Image (cartoon, rainbow, N blue to C red; front, side, top):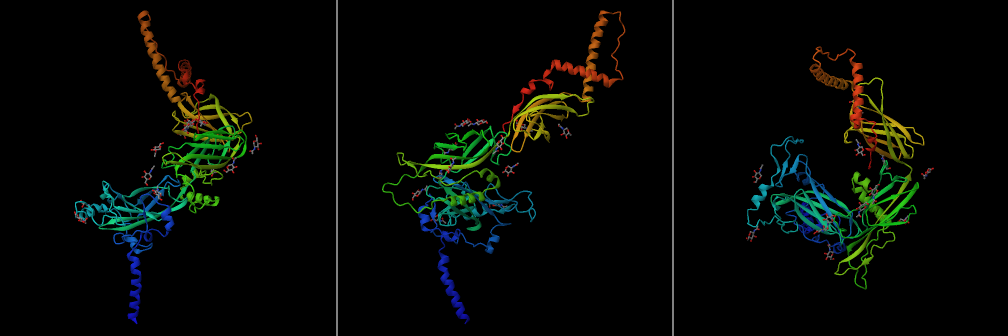
Length: 589
Ligand SMILES: *[C@@H]1O[C@H](CO)[C@@H](O)[C@H](O)[C@H]1NC(C)=O
Ligand SMILES: *[C@@H]1O[C@H](CO)[C@@H](O)[C@H](O)[C@H]1NC(C)=O
Ligand SMILES: *[C@@H]1O[C@H](CO)[C@@H](O)[C@H](O)[C@H]1NC(C)=O
Ligand SMILES: *[C@@H]1O[C@H](CO)[C@@H](O)[C@H](O)[C@H]1NC(C)=O
Ligand SMILES: *[C@@H]1O[C@H](CO)[C@@H](O)[C@H](O)[C@H]1NC(C)=O
Ligand SMILES: *[C@@H]1O[C@H](CO)[C@@H](O)[C@H](O)[C@H]1NC(C)=O
Ligand SMILES: *[C@@H]1O[C@H](CO)[C@@H](O)[C@H](O)[C@H]1NC(C)=O
Ligand SMILES: *[C@@H]1O[C@H](CO)[C@@H](O)[C@H](O)[C@H]1NC(C)=O
Ligand SMILES: *[C@@H]1O[C@H](CO)[C@@H](O)[C@H](O)[C@H]1NC(C)=O
Ligand SMILES: *[C@@H]1O[C@H](CO)[C@@H](O)[C@H](O)[C@H]1NC(C)=O
Ligand SMILES: *[C@@H]1O[C@H](CO)[C@@H](O)[C@H](O)[C@H]1NC(C)=O
Ligand SMILES: *[C@@H]1O[C@H](CO)[C@@H](O)[C@H](O)[C@H]1NC(C)=O
């Protein structure tokens, strides 16, 4: 009985053997089994069919969850991070980048070996051996066989020899990219980049999978697998940023009446496919101002009414494309025509792949379908160079409200105080504004370069239709200050900036100044006295200036005199100088 089991077991094994013996690329790479149609109609330049055989001896294949993964890397697991510059306009290049992230405290050194970072402490503490993997040792002993350096293990999974780029021996990772039923092998360090031309790629989302191996003596060990969705589209990917001076929140699509909104169109074209294309921008702002066609990617538009408007942009570019088929046209492959639903899904896929920061920028990016424009509007150019008109679309709904249009400081006044405190210079700013009525005022007092904030205060304001208000602020001492003053309400924020000079009123320094003055006066007195002595030899007695006990009062008087003198000789130092009002510079924001 036992014998029979063994026999059956042997039969089962034997039946499995031929399958295991001839592993093909598509058995190894990913779960998707691409159709022959996919391979044929999506030919990628320089890529090979995944029907090819995979050398499993040199490149072992482990299933997900295999125990051997645990020991595939010393000190933890390596993560492969795959990114792409998707979405790609069909015909342009799409670039994929894989970066390996090693366990804590490990890094690749200049020779391509993996070392422990100096002074970095992980769970195992500081390592005595500086190397995680010293591949230099391996590659030297194994390549000694032949002068050519071409040994049987310096090959890719399909048996092709490694290309001998300079320094290739220090490249210790093998990357196998797989998409659309084809693969691409690359030797590299901890980061590699692969560009693919999308001219033959079916439109829509596609999957890219990457498997990474590391050297292990004369064989290779799988260390990571990663996949990512990318999108090929016949719509020009368009991003639009909308900005406006005085707009409080640039991402809520609410803007202000009577101020220009700047629309800046960014075409996502990382491979510079459209470098030599003429690009047209056709705008409709939705406020019955008609169509506006421009070749400039930035345009300004001012809405003069409040309300809600839907704006439309169509971007058109003549791009290199397939030449029209010779007549009679052969039947086109059954390409799924993207319905609005598909595009919405696409957008969701793209959005889900982006980080939060990118998303805020991208929320205006639209992949909405062609809607009437024919993307296959062909025009022939001699020499087999054909061009095709590609379109990009953008739609948005903007809300226009009234806002604060302008703020001006019309006067700055020094507030006189009965008793000067230790750090008390008060200045009143008389401010006017245009547009809606502000609800708050903020000041930022900073150094004369307007960069280092010293004090920031906001307070609610209650002003009438006239919009005239006085803002009082304290300054810590004499000197030049930059004052940024903003008036705001729910939707707008208007800024003005001015430089002011606060006079010296600190009693301690007044005293210093008084003493200096006294010394000067003393010198003058001595000088006068000497002259007097010379001239009037009879007057023998010299009376020095009294240092009276009523020092404070006296110095105050003297200081007042000196300040007045200063006002005559150095008018620029007084905050009341009308010139200062002209120094105000408007915010860009
Ligand atoms: C597209 O496919 C054709 C064959 O179908 C091939 O000759 C051509 O090189 C491919 N183009 C690119 C960019 O891969
Ligand atoms: C790494 O290998 C090289 C080449 O064999 C050798 O010179 C070096 O000493 C090795 N380093 C360590 C730490 O083993
Ligand atoms: C070594 O070189 C000889 C000829 O120079 C060649 O026949 C042989 O295949 C090479 N061996 C290896 C392992 O590359
Ligand atoms: C596109 O990628 C191919 C490699 O697939 C490369 O040879 C070519 O230079 C790239 N073209 C541009 C414009 O980047
Ligand atoms: C700006 O508007 C966006 C969208 O409405 C909102 O999520 C965000 O919280 C707003 N930011 C501020 C500072 O109010
Ligand atoms: C396209 O233009 C950019 C700058 O505008 C330049 O950096 C890039 O090299 C150009 N690329 C090609 C393929 O012409
Ligand atoms: C904006 O474009 C869409 C589709 O492209 C169209 O249905 C709509 O009428 C356009 N709106 C305006 C105001 O042009
Ligand atoms: C677009 O307009 C801006 C502002 O008027 C100007 O500075 C820029 O040179 C223009 N660009 C082109 C390509 O005309
Ligand atoms: C748009 O207006 C801003 C000022 O609000 C100006 O700097 C810019 O040059 C204008 N751009 C165009 C294209 O007119
Ligand atoms: C437009 O502004 C007026 C005041 O000028 C206001 O009464 C009206 O409610 C506003 N309409 C909208 C849609 O905001
Ligand atoms: C004055 O100094 C105090 C303490 O150093 C600081 O809190 C305050 O913000 C300063 N005020 C100004 C207007 O610089
Ligand atoms: C004050 O406003 C100017 C623009 O007018 C700006 O460049 C500067 O950074 C602002 N300073 C502070 C401290 O916010």
